[in-house]
Length: 465
Image (cartoon, rainbow, N blue to C red; front, side, top):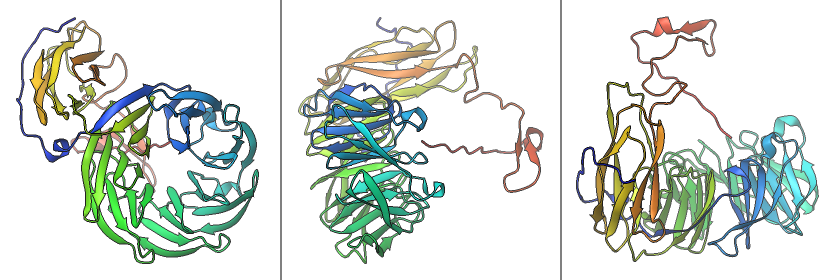
């Protein structure tokens, strides 16, 4: 139903900051739930996309019609938790999937509608099993193994594999091979460049410290583009691979984990959104942006079509100048801290119009009385924005509810914002910390809550797939 306005806190149409001023040119072609869940990667070979997930294993997807991707088969990796394989690459009739500690699964895809396990490659010993990413030039498989380096494996007689060489690294996340040169995303150590003309005797020939942690690489001509985590994307001139030169950094809004480049643009999986950068010999500029509300894990670009693995869905975009209205939001998830029943809390959301025609917000739909929205209807001119409030006063309603904006955006006529308030159980931001006692790291004894009273405390947690 149409929500009653509690408090209209429009902060008005305003000149957008640079991040939004050029944030346009991405329209949604499709959003597809696959057979698997918690999507981790996307690798494309001709008309097929290989998409692994944290739950459910691999889906092989026909993307010949990018507006209607279709799962044609699946592969569940036996021996791996939840059938999970993290990344895939393809050479000929075989696909190679890296499963960290559970090795490299080699599947026969001569009939992609019915893939079959050919072998599981486990390397020389258990200590070497840290397979994160695979790259191939057809005869050699390059396996990124974090602190264990890059393992070079002969696959010319697949499915019979044998190791032929190794490249020492600090923390290899991914690699890319071109013209007998291997470009390595080596974590905090930046990039490394190795000659792999003789795979049995690879030679490191160049390196460069990057602006952040090197996670992924993409090469176009003389330029290497590196996803560097919280620092965004680095552009590096590798025309002389022995002396790579830093050209530019673009600090994206989130955490750049993957990059995919073509002759003029770079697509970035930036955790909270997809960003498109254009480049020339002077550097990079933001020309496309879209936050669908998904968790963007990986990305691949073919021409002007972008395939984004967004945890719950495969989202396909088209890059083009948008002639109509185009809505973007500062967030599609509004999460309130703990609010007591006698209190209330307000959080803002900014709507921007990245199209070339006025954006109409026809109405806002929400069913929970605990959340009141400071917006009913509005019109936004091109390259403009407005900010409205969401007011939370916990009462008798549900603790979570979607807010739906009904618009004239042709590819997003209804946009959903997920709103959450007080969890019905379990801790959340704003709660009093419970008593606890923790072991002292690299020391003897423990530390308890009583010893920390009155002091600022940061508890740092780290987890990863």
